[in-house]
Structures are given as C-alpha cells and as structure tokens.
Amino acid sequence: MSDGIEDVILVGLGPVGLTMAAVLGQRGHRVTAIERHPQFYGLPRAGHVDHEIVRILQSLDAEGPLLADSYPTVEYRWVNATGETLLEFDWGSAGLSGYHSHYMQYQPVLEAALADRVRADPALALLQGWEAVGLVEHEDHVAVTARRDGDDEVRVLRGRYLVGADGAGSFVRKALGIEREDLGFNERWLDVDARKKRELRFDFDCGQICDPRRPVTILPLGKRHRRWEWALLPGEVTGEFEKPDMAWRLLGELGVGPDDIEIVRQIVYTFEARTARAFRRGRAFLIGDAAHTMPPFMGQGMCSGMRDAKNLGWKLDLVLRGLAPDGLLDTFETELRPYVRDWTTISLESGKVPCTTDPDEARERDARFRAGWLPPMPDFPQIRHGLIHRDPGGAPIAPAGELSLQARVERDGRTELFDRAFDAAGRWQVVSTAGDPRAELDAAQLALLERLGTVFAHIGSDVGADARDVDGTYRTYAKERAVEVTIARPDFYIFGAATTQAGLPRLVDDLAAQLRMTTVTGGLG
Image (cartoon, rainbow, N blue to C red):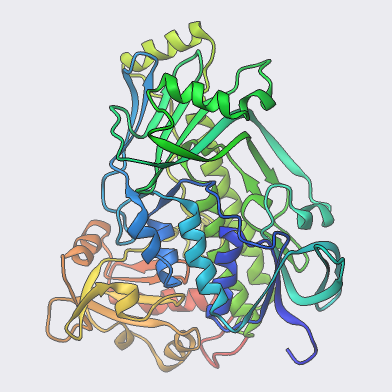
C-alpha cells in the first residue's frame, strides 16, 4: 500500500506461517513475514499429513516433493508389551481429497517446497533473522517492532492485520495478553529422528508399543528417514536422555545400531494440550501452535495449523478486497475453536492408551481390549458453526461443514484432479452432477459468485458436461449424499448442498446474507 501499511504482517515461518504467506500471496496481498531464525529450521518435527493437507499443498503447487518422498500409510497399529494388537487404524484407504488418506513424511521436504513457493512470490517479503519485540495496535493497522539478530537494527512494520504463527512460545500471544488453557496433559518423550543408511525391515513398522515399562513410538518419516520415541518415566532426568549414549542404548534394545542409521535429531519434548483463550484480538490473530497444541498421537498438530492458515487466508482475502466486512473474520475462531478442541480431545483420549505406565492398569487395559471394549472416541471433526448452510435451529444441513470431494476428471483431453483441471486453487467452487449450475441462477446471483471468483463445473458423462467423471467418483458421492450440487469454500469445506439444482438459488442467497453481500448489486450489504 502507498501509505507504507502492508496488508498483513506475519510472525513465524514454520510450515503454518509459510502456508499462511503462500495463501495470501497467491491472492496478490502484500505480506511482510518476520522469522527470528536466519535460516529455515531444516529438522523434522511433525511426521504425518492427511489427504486434506496434501490438497492444501496442491492448491499452492507445492505437493510434488512431499508426494515423491512420503510414505503412504496402510495401518497405524498399537500393540502391548507382548506384541498383541490393541488398536488398529485403517489408514490405507483413499481420501476425499484425491489422495491416499494418510502419509508419513519428512517435514524438511514439506517446508522446503513451501519456502520455494513463498520465495518466488513478489508480493511476499521475508525478514529472516529478525525477531518481533514490540506490538502496538492502532485503529486501522497494527505496528510490529522487529530487531535484527547480530547488529540490533530495528524496524517498525505496519499491516492492516497481524497473524502470529510463532509457535507454542508465541511472542504475539504474550504481547496480546492472551492466556492459555491447560487441558491437563504434560508428558516428556525422547524423540530420535534418523536417516536410514540401508533398507530396514521391521515386524512392527508404524504405531505405538504400549509397554508400561516404557511406552515407545515407531514411525517412518518418508522414504529415507525414521522416528523412534520413548516416554520418560517419573524421576528420570531430561538431560540424561539427550545424551547420544542413551539413544543408542534404547535403539539397541530394538535391534537398531550405527550401521543402520545416522541420528539427525535427538531431543526431549514435553507433549502438552493447551489452547489460547482467544484466537483473535482486534486486528491480530493466532494460528497453529501459537493458538493450540495437542499430543501427537493422532498426528494432527501441524495439520490443524495448516487448516488454520487456509481458513483465515481466504477470509482475509475477502475482507482485504472489500468483498466482506471485518466481521467475517470472527468466524475463524467460531469455526476452528470447536474443530481444534475435537481433535485435541481425540488426541488426549487416544494418548491414554500408550501412556499407561502402571503395570496393573496396563493389564486391565489389555483385558478390556481383548474383551472387545474400545474407549469411546468422538466423531472426527467437521465445521459445525460459522459460514455454513444451517437449518432454522442452527444445525448444519449435511453435507455442509464436511470436506468437499476432489477426484479425477477428464477435461480438454487431459485427466487431472479437479482443482488443477479447473484452475480452482483458492477459489469458490459450484459443482453439479446434473447440468450447468449457472442455468438455475439469476443475473444478480451469478454476479455475486463471479465477484468471488467462483469456478462453475458440470461433472458427468453426457456430452454437455464440462468434464468427464473419470472414475465415477462424483456420481457415487452425489448418490450417497442425495445431492446434485454443492458450493465449496476456498478451504474446501462445503458451504451447502442441494438435493436438486433447483435448490441452488436458495443456497446462493444464504451465502450472500452470511457474507453480508447482496445479490442485487453485488456490493456490500
């Protein structure tokens, strides 16, 4: 902006911050990002992504390196001390997003792909080696004071909005005076990540060994790396477990030695479950670990942060372009606080199984599982509040709030996933299996959707379709859910669906009302 105020100041350039920067840059917004480390971290932390996250990466043209190096997971298994299976998660199916449902990955590969995307975007300015040390909110912008490491040069950066993606120890959260709620999980685990020197085969390859003497996690990290984790018991000293001899002793108990692997990272983590009491304060937002942390047992920590970035990104885009009022940004917390709480609850409940260290409790646990008793798990999360189509009582009208489908289509002689075939990354989508969805809309409704940059698509097998349903996936999806047309948001979540195309105009009017846009002029309501 000519007055020296950027659209967004972003603090933190881990995978969540990089996603936030890339989403905003893709829409042409000016962003200055501050990262206190002079180089990207370059070591693994998160080890898992699901199909939704790969679709987010696809929308940023950053999925290729991850898919080339990642390990499509078939099962995620939890066994007791004798190797008896307690829990088995089927992770071998296809996901709704057009990819395998779950992948084990090496985080530096993911980060490097996002970093390349961000560096190539002229709308994005990166200040690496700069630390945010001050924050002042003004009526129309936020001012952030940053100090460069090494020479203490100071700059004041101004943005219409501020996003804190600066981790669990977030400066932004502390500067805003936002406390965190402790949900009662604090467990120390030794993490050892290693590069394989040769191909390794294990009878137990991916999951938890729920041994009360010392719980263990074993995971592949993509195709070339592996992770082992061990719980620290009460009274054990953290520093002792960060010594190389301890890592090799524990690895040796599992039959792994220096001829097999090279250790690239050894650290003791405290797994925690904490949530900021607010995700927004004025013009400032918290995303990722700055807003919420959870135990790693379902692999949703980084995934949740990247969802945050995608959700907040498209809403900031509309507000910054003047297509929606600032109040739209309140739905970021309205939607994602309960969503994240659901994932945290699932992670906490699942974590109770491997973290049992009392032998008697472990025997009772094993007996319950043998008898077929499984701990109650909440349903996997979906968006239940915020910008979705609801009934008069406020409940989502299914499939509103669910992830939308992406599958293979043939268009202009090429077979590709839908988002790529229709250049639909970061855009609203109106998809029908019954005909041209535009035929049901009046001029004002069409104008509104076109202002949003909406992609319209008729997917089917008839001659008039925009693209052919290569595998019949869209037809099956429509039949199972009894819908002909869906409206999907830029974060891939369904705003609403109609059983017939004749119901589409009502959906568009509801969308306009919730965005506070008008179908009469296409302007602000």
